[in-house]
Length: 171
Image: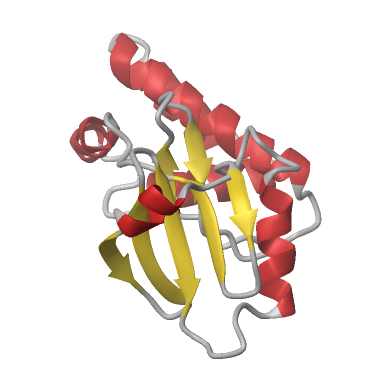
């Protein structure tokens, strides 16, 4: 349960079409709906999926019609290195790597992924990061096999344990 002291320490982080985001305590955020009648039924369904799939989504601590409190996600620490590497080897240049991995796995077209991993095997840091992205993406596909997903790097972060999580997934 969130303490009153934590709520009083809220700091505005930003916002978007669906709501405003505030920090709550050290590693939690509160997403407040922008709409007077709160989140839609689809949004509530989406947030209810979070705790069913803890290997994919941040943990939800509290969910009401008007706000959700969940684990805060941070930028993926190795992402810039991976993006620079992809540009250097000219694979998926100017493309979102998470999106490309997603569609390659979804369409069972592993040729580019295999090429990428073969080129990266001499750089253990990049290779391990790519493997982590691929396994995470496969977890999402396994959990939602018949859904069309808007999957992109800007919707992925790491929790306080360094585990990849997605926080904005259109199902």
